[in-house]
Length: 189
Image (cartoon, rainbow, N blue to C red; front, side):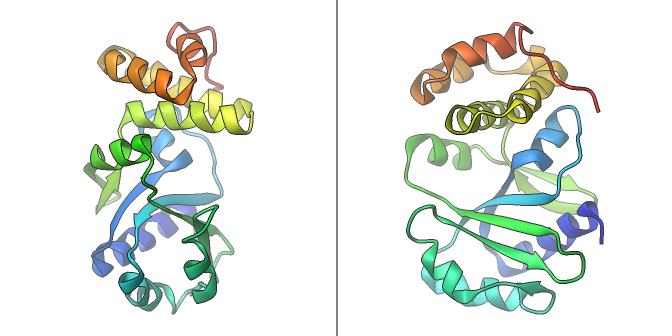
């Protein structure tokens, strides 16, 4: 199973389960920016405890998904994963948190069609901000390159006021400036 096939499969399962989700991470920076290879999928999911059985039911046939890990995700780091038994590729699920930026990002998610499937993804601006925030937490040239790739492809259409506002909030305004001005460039793959 390829990453593309896994993405389609996961989108179908999440849509059938009628769960509120948003695709994030490298798959979405690939959508908005300069594509690179990635070996997992990242979803932010709104998962009330009453919805856990629906999620487990949708994923149980082809994924290793630990019910205890799902319940443990209600505590930090608020994350669990599902391992695809067919390919050994990993799907990370992050529970939506009440932090202002996460809520704003989730409320702005867009409904698009990816490979024929309806999908909810974060906006180009939110990909940039999220990548810069993750770089601040755990420095990585990959995060910076992904953000720069989104800017390179969408530069003139980006909401700069929104970017500045949340960059201040996330304490990444200098890094955002470097990405927006081209001082940090994307790696072409």
